[in-house]
Image (cartoon, rainbow over all chains, first blue to last red; front, side, top):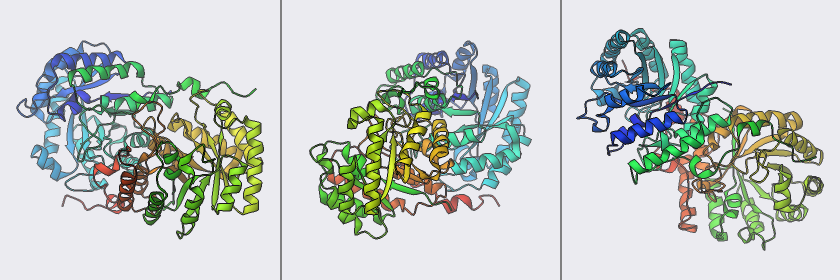
Length: 310
Length: 310
């Protein structure tokens, strides 16, 4: 059975996309419950200035808490070298820096052009290496940008190669805008792999246009082994214009488990974790087909059912 | 460019799943508008007794109307030989009979076991041949049954072969219950094709668990060339237990067009057709991510964008 790593990014990508601040206690309960359901990696927050994202102000405390959970890989996002130093100090297992393939988006978002970002990545890589922390680069807006429109695949390949040169140990392709389609996913994985090889492991997909799981499938078929997702699709409203809409962890796990891929996640337990979100963020919309659709057939029953005819 | 036939089944599968009866005029407007958007095949209704499904009572009139639209392939569902005779008389181009792979479901639904259904299929085939009408068999509950649970793939293969022997010219695999997963879709297509070859052309998918487009992608990769879908996912509520939830035509077309597959359908025009449903069935939920997510990047721009760097 092929093992697939489902990386929960809700505590970071979900929570940073909503205005409300979730309490530290609720975040801890969420992380603990997902780990107990079998989730092996969680991005618990990001080391950005609390003045910019008050939702992430307790990331260091969350890292310390998450580190106490046996077997859990604790990840945080870092925007720059300063954040990387804080992440190392907090004790993360791994850190990830977003690198926007659209230069306009990069300038708008972090006020850095591509050369400045590559310099930042080199600095982060040094800090990560010195701290013995795994360091990944998220190639964001890789499938298109709401400002620039389409992004050249050759440009993504070139920038990925440059980031690898600068010290990135691992890469994800990130559909920040929900523009990805399955053919593009396959094509771009192939091209980027040509530049950085097996360092490309991960897809970070949004479900803005409902293509999230189809894009995930396309990625799996090209050898992607890690998929980011957010419990309840938290932070994105698939039915509102401009919404981000992370891939829903529950629906992703349903698909992977049904296909006989090994996630190690107990879907029934995972579904129970929604209750923590519902109580901590009353009225916040939670998405996903799985919670209401009734149970899926078990994989083992699927592949060897009894015959109904004599 | 590979041509993919998107077969609109909303006027049949969508409308038969809701209690309300849509007026003949609204149905005509719907069919005409979808054809004008580029949809080349529409299942306009079913020839069941009006006492059972009053929503379908005007199917013969709809067939006559749809036949006046140039280039449109006009399909109707028939439950049995009696319905087939009515379909031929009405002038359909093609008819389709559902054949439930779960014998329990078949008995419950049409009070016929598998041998009785095969006899019916043989009779329908004769009527279709005599009338010069194309005749397809829909292998329903092929991916599992809410009553029986998993359905043996070997049983599906055996029954498909028997139906081909009885005169079926074409086959669809139908995920009546929303149990299909992408691995199963690929596996079952391969097995059924071993029995009936290229007569297997079509997937009829429901989006009950959100896997509809991923399953469609799996089918395309196995050479499926026709995909059934329902405008606005009419008739199925993906967020309610037990709901059917047809694949949403708009989302399917978005995916296919984005991938550079040729549907001949103008997505912007297709989205406008939702207004006809909204006006004819006020308050009836319409689904799909595409209508609210904002426009997708154009395929030609996607594959050859300008570079943002000098």
